[in-house]
Each structure stands twice: as structure tokens, then as C-alpha cells.
Image: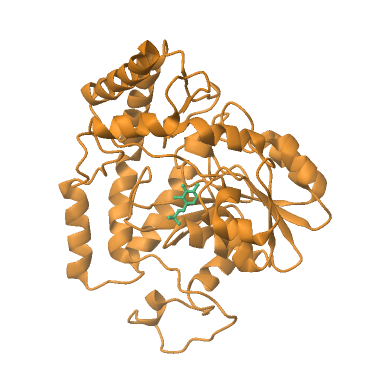
Amino acid sequence: MSGFRIPFFRPSIDEDDIAAVADTLRSGWLTSAGNVQALERELADYTGAGFVNAVNSCTAAMHLCLRAWDIGPGDEVITTPWTFSATATVIVHTGATPVLADIREGDFNIDPEQVERAVTPRTKAIIPVHYAGEPCDMDALQDIAERHNLKILEDAAHAIGTMYRGRMVGQLSDAAAFSFYATKNMTTGEGGALATDDEALSDRVRRLTLHGMNRDAWNRYDPGGSWRYDIIEFGFKDNLTDPAAALGRRQLTKLERFTEERTRVAQRYFANLAGEEHVRLPAFDERNRQAWHLFEIRILPSSPVGRDDVIRQLAARGIQTSVHFIPLHYHTAYKNLGYWKQGDFPVAEAAFEGAISLPLFPDMTNAEVDDVCQALHDILAGAAAK
Ligand SMILES: *Cc1c(COP(=O)(O)O)cnc(C)c1O
């Protein structure tokens, strides 16, 4: 498939996942129906959130949440440069202005001190990203949000199952958005969800998800349902489908095991790479539970072989890696906004110079982890010997 001996990621799809999807196809429910409603309930149980809206991506979940809060032109929303573009794109699409606050050394999560500095009278919300599955400093962010009357929407694309001081992501702030994209910790192919304790928010998001309609197709086509509906406001088309939700329900039953396996892989990386002087390993807080979506190492400036070269040499040995992330302000569309220049986010910029995401997926064997580590040792030692 990928052509790599050890791919960056391999999804965990079993026969029971396949059977669940096949069942929905036989049932005739191809759009949003019983499996979507069941997945929403099961995600609420799992995360401890009061309400969950299943949608077709994490991007949609974040966009709909900002829309439901009526965030728009003239407003500012603070997020991190160390994320996937979607986190900030959704701000732009509401007409609001994205404001970036640098990350902190260590876990690469948004730095509350930088957030505090970025707050203005126009600020309406903060979107922290739980990078790699390590939660942000939510106590500090909540404190800022309360003092300035801001909403918090967590980008929890990496963080389903993450716990902050014993509490699941999904019950930590105003809202949290999960991703069920193919490479995420659980998948529906494409999919996502918004978790919140705010019923009014959940209701508004539900309406915006499906055209701004006052009732969904499930009700309309039910035997007792009616053909009548009303368009209350101008909405979007972001609903999850039943075949995808059926896959998500199976995946959710296995998520705890997936997380255990990811943790096993991460621990083995830590053990194997502990003595590697040119590599900095991920920082995490023992008081939290990490979802280990990524294992991001940093090739230190002291290394005789640079990051790009390490990636090339790993690839030559059949090992696929990635980089998370290219800082947002390095991308053309963000440059064209004219808000930022190189040097504005020194921590994110320095992190980017050395960042490499190593392969990490639940079915990765210990031998595969050892193989990746040996290759890294060889590459770094080989260059040092020259
Ligand atoms: C994957 C990802 C997203 C987008 O998720 P989709 O479900 O593909 O929309 C958003 N933020 C981060 C940090 C991600 O890694």
C-alpha cells in the first residue's frame, strides 16, 4: 500500500467493523439515522459530556460551534500556530479574525501566558489544541476565559480518551471537537463530533448541521413523521452518515484497547531512545492520561544530521514518518493575510526545525518499534562518526 516497510500509520479495521457497516447498507439507512443517534449517546457516555453532536468532520464540528456562538466579523479568536490548518480556517470562514499565541517548550501546547497577552476587547473565544493527545493547561486557560468572558472550544482531534487531572476531554470546557478521520485514534473514515454540556449549543449545532431545518430526516421519514419542515436559518450540510456511525460505534468499543496499545508503543520509544543525546523526547504530565495520537521527537540543533536528512534516511530504510506541524504562519494563505511574519512565534518555529512524528498505531509490534529506534540510532551515529 504505502510501499514502506513500516508505515507511519495503519488503521485498525477488523471483521466486526466491516460487518457493522455492511449491516447498515442492508438496512437501507444510508444517511443519518439510528446509528448516528446511538453513537452520539455512546460518545456522551464515554466522555462524560452532557450532549454530543456527530458530524462529518472535526472541522465541521468546530465551524458549527463558532457559528452557533454567533462569532463573526469584528470578533477575534485565539488559537495556536502549532496545529493543522482546519483549526484556524474555521475562524476565517466565520468572518472573525484568527489570532495566534505561541506554544510553550515541553509539550508544544498553547502557552497560557501568550494567550493572556493576545486577549483584546474583541476576543470572543480560545481554541486550544491538545497536541498529540497531551491536554493543554486547562486550569490556566479557564482562568483567562473567566476573567475575560471568553468561550473555550477545544480542538480535541488528537485527544479522544485524553484525561486532564482525571477528567475526560469532553467535560473540561464549553465544547470539545473530536476527529474520526482515517488516521485518528478512532475512525469513521471521515467524521467528527462536538461534545458539550450546553443543551442550547447542541440544539443550535444540530439545526446548523442540517440546512437550518427544524427537524431531521430521521423524523421526516419515520412512519409517524410528516413531510413538513421549516428552514429556521441558513445552515450547512455536515451530518454524519449511518454507515460511518456504525463503524464509529465498533471503533469506540475498542478505543480503550487502542489507547493501551498506543501507550505501549510510546513507552517502548521512551525506553529505546532515552540515551539518544541528539533527540528530545515528548514531554508529558504524569497527572494526565495521554491519548498518544503522535510520538513527536525533536532532532536537536546539536545533531550533526538535520531533520530533513533524518526523514530521508529513515525513508530509505523503509520507515515512513511525518511532521506535525508546519506552523500556520508559514503557509501561503496565512502569509497572505498579512498578520504575521517569521520570528513572531519563536517556540513553534524552533520546534518545527527539528520535529519528526514517528510511526505509531495500535497494531505496531514491539519489533517494529525497535526497528525504527535502531534506524534512528544508526543514522545519528553514522553521521556523528564522519
Ligand atoms: C485532523 C485534525 C483536524 C481536522 O479533523 P477532520 O476530522 O479531518 O476535520 C483538526 N485539528 C487537528 C489538530 C487535527 O489533527
